[in-house]
Picture 1 (cartoon, one colour):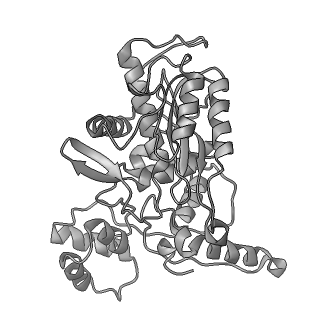
Picture 2 (spheres, rainbow, N blue to C red):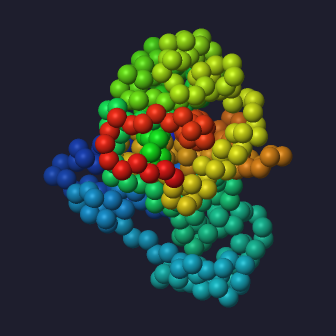
Length: 356
């Protein structure tokens, strides 16, 4: 399995890896093995190489049983790539005993400017680094993981971003007292032939929203109206009396993300800073959709505008979705506006209450 950092869902890489794993598993006597050769993967791209790295990390942290995996990666220590001497030292460290690699030729390749600095670090230094325009660093997001869950009757805010066919649909909750982020639903177009003609099951999504409203103490709910106008209107009509604040002057629930750029930009910067400072929490991969939320968060790219720093997909046609991040942003905006209003409804649960 060569260059598995390029094996992603959209090019059939995930399916190929599963096929190989299945064939290895069916080998007589268990004698077959697979070998994976790769550069450092791009964090958040969910390549086969990144999946392998996560599997090894769990084993190294004693969080999963021994799967018979042998992981060998020689990485450069932190160096300043702009310093030729440090760069040479890093390349020498990363190449290990592959002494046929020409260090000076690699240095000239890096300094030619034909590839971003982050890609040079992944390719020649074996360092797991994010793209330059990545909104949130993987380390910052992963450092916010905690062993915690939502419980019935918790005070929460909800965020919703809906698609129809290609874009994903996401419903995310944030617990009001401690800013715990929990994905309640993410619906994505299936890969391969299963995705032909696919549309999100709107009745299922509607059911998930209504279940959240009944199960938790939802104090604010911000939902992007695009493509879901009738459903947002129905949610607003049915639950307006239970919500402490309105999402907009026109609706108890509807918050059109095509408008209010300044407020959304400030909300994005506020959420970014909270992640960097460890002032949000999430259950990580301990919940079913934790890995999906992480992928969407790490897919988000920096998009400057006249008000500051917003977010977007890598490009308009990108298969790397960010809808769960958009839903998280709306839920966090709802929580911020709720707290600033001074109208927060006391939680039914006992215990300490603290705000970030």
